[in-house]
Length: 441
Image (cartoon, rainbow, N blue to C red; front, side, top):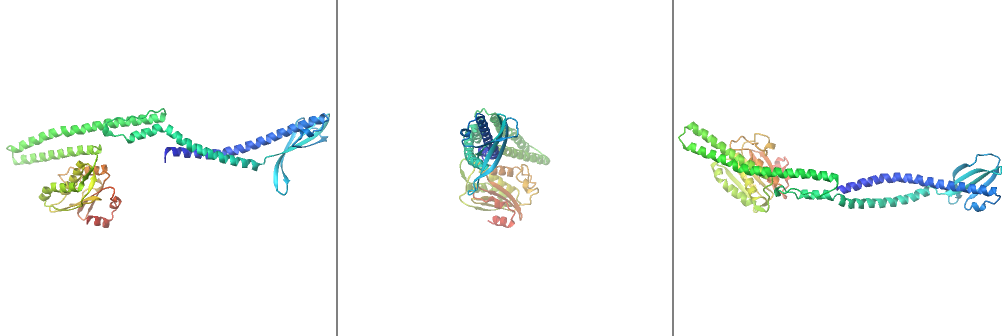
């Protein structure tokens, strides 16, 4: 729900509470004012009639529209003594229509003789007042609702313009552009505070990104040099006159250096992936990339005496950075080879919905949920650095792919689902029958 709609609903809710309360107050105010005016007018009529009686003149001309009764009385009352009564009077029994009548009785001392003067008049009934109020309230409510909705829409365009401007700037903000965010000016304190916070956070993000990118680039170059020196020195040592146990130590050191080199390259790659430095600009022929990757590993496959089966559909084009396509396939295939057993099998299935890589091997040592975390190994393989599947997971997340791992019947199964054709929710089920059908493809 939009912010302006919430404001509108709040205003309408408040209005619906206030209007009934205001209507009750208005009803009693109008009724009291009508009664007060009628009483004051009747009092004035009684006074004028008393004055005319005192002058010996007939009071008829002062009682137009009002029925006035006056009579002598022996009872003495204080001056300006009034008795006010109200009653319902039926003027037409056939219509059964009652009218509300106010009667004012006053007592006057005229030439040492007390007179009782009574006058009355008909006033609006409560039902008539309520009927008028209902019509008035209905029109007020309609006009007020229309004004609230219209005013909220118009005011939101003016008041919330800086807020919408900030959101638009954030939507188009790109760290890789290395440009600091410029937010619209505003005189509203809350929007000023928001812009100040957003500006501070985005500036820090730009600085951190620049520092991290610079570190990645420097690490890529600076660490390669000492590693290359160590590697060359080890090669020189291996060519010198050394004993058997020394050769074993040098070989172990060389393996450690190679492993450190791979770790360095992988961590730098992960850093670049997390910073979204690989942006897909066009589709790549993923089927051809898969065939090329299988061909590149043919020596290792033959060395380990593995049997490879492939079912690659053509064409399969994915919107994916070319370098990431190579890295994704290389990591999946190298993982299938490394964690396989001599004389085992590898099966690669590719279509427009998913890529599946199956290989024989021992059951994973750790929890399956940790397979895609950094430095987590499915098995304690010395040649593995525990980052390959983490890189694969990062690439899949970047490109809205979904990766899953299963181990069943002695087979490691990695499935990468491609959007939007694939129904990945089916693969998340633990239905062994469904999984068996996918494996048999």
